[in-house]
Length: 117
Image (cartoon, rainbow, N blue to C red; front, side, top):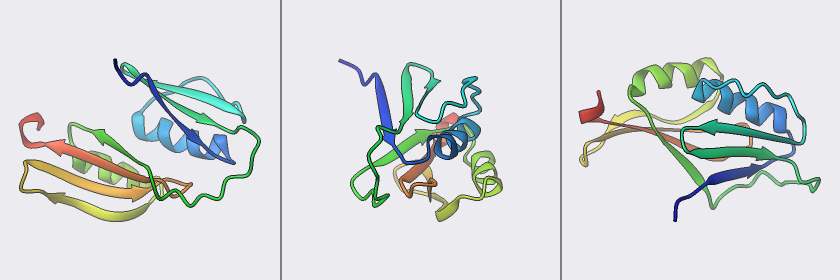
C-alpha cells in the first residue's frame, strides 16, 4: 500500500493552491475555485472546497517535504510571504529542518538531508 494523495480542505482553493504550486514549482494549468490536483512525483496533493465552512484551526496535521537545498526553498518561502515558524536549523539526526504556516495555517516542514546536498 502507498499513500496516493493528501487533500487539504480549504475555503480558498486558489490562494492555497497557488502557494503549493509556487513552492513545488508546478503549473497544473488550473485556476478552479473548487478543486485542484497538484501532482508531484507519485503522490497527489489536492486542494479542495467541499462547500462547508472551515475554521482554519488545523492543529492535527502537518505536511513534510524533503528538498535538495533547504536554503533555496527557505528564500522562496520568505519571498512568497509565508509566516516562518522556524528558520533552517541542523538537527542531530542529520537533517536540516525549517517550518512555516501555509495560508490556512497548516504547519509545513521542509527538510534536507546532508547526503542529498
